[in-house]
Amino acid sequence: MSGQKDAFFLGATQLILGTLGASVFPTIVKVPSGAVGLQMKLLGASGSTVQILPNAVSGASIGGATAITSIGGYPLVTGEMYPIQGPASFYLAATGASATVALNFMFSSAGASGLLA
Image 1 (cartoon, rainbow, N blue to C red):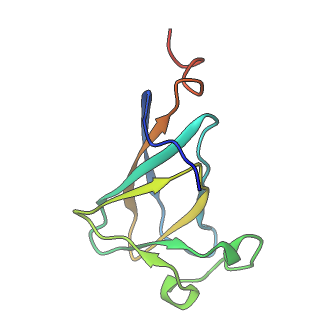
Image 2 (image 1 turned 45 degrees about the vertical axis):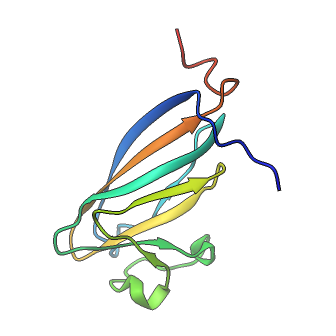
Image 3 (image 1 turned 120 degrees about the vertical axis):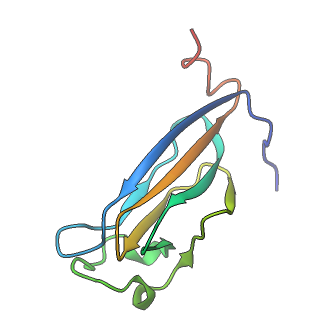
């Protein structure tokens, strides 16, 4: 399997995840065009559970779910950085309270050509 790990340009953002409920659905994270990977960190989640959800939630009716543990997934913890190789898209959800997640996107030189002035 081949891949590129060297980043030429970084771009970052923060997401505020609302509490999963009747009108708040999981948030999809779509990696921008030209990105070769990303790093993710849970910044603040006091009283909240945040998880990367399984792909099965795509198109599933889970509105109103208040326990993402029943959906399954990978729980995030503060103090840990999660590197993701490749331009992967995924779902995030929070329960209990809103949570903040930081995302650091890594771009190749070709992918960053339109970003640099």
